[in-house]
Length: 261
Image (cartoon, rainbow, N blue to C red; front, side, top):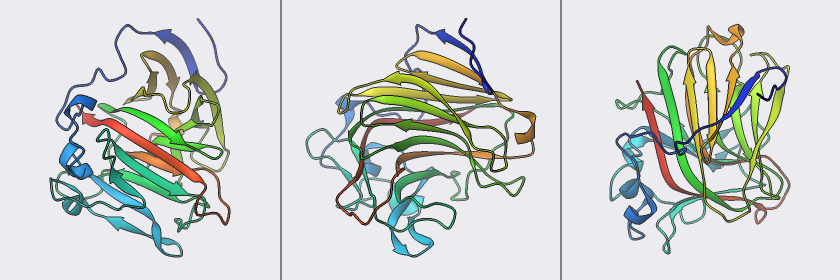
């Protein structure tokens, strides 16, 4: 067994693939229709979309009612369906509108409830986010999946973030505590730029697991996070900034499923 510092507990390999989570809203590459907006291929009724546009500190947000269905929202610059393979495509430039607590622009989905309210679940139960994706371009670093802290305290930090770098290295950043003490970065795999791969993030009590192409790493969530609720995020959260609107991170999703049991 491989031991890691801080939050990491164990490394194990599973026979199951990282997309071994069933549920409504799943999409395979074969089922994707290049002629439909993202909401026609993916269940976006439980997501809102944050864009790198808007006014300073207040990015534009597209609500689930606008995203879902065959006539759902699309944006040719930041969020669209690839006409060749049907993938849900996110583009986040290095220069764009950011939230007050971040220096980085994003084209990213935020988990919502079916009634349109913001998702905000406890650590109790089993919560999963699974995806098949590929990164087309990235300048330095891009977050493609997050477990974000909701209500329960003053921290706005993520519990965990999944990062991809230009050389194909994948890292899982786990927050050491709810305050500003920083993350521990765990190397969890390497996939060449432009190649499809899968991830599965599971939160169950104080257990956090990540599967990359079926290889699972397990972590313990510190008790300091117990008062907090959580929600998932997925897309292109670019981790570099400059005055360039042409440099950035383009991420394509072929499947995206969120499930709570």
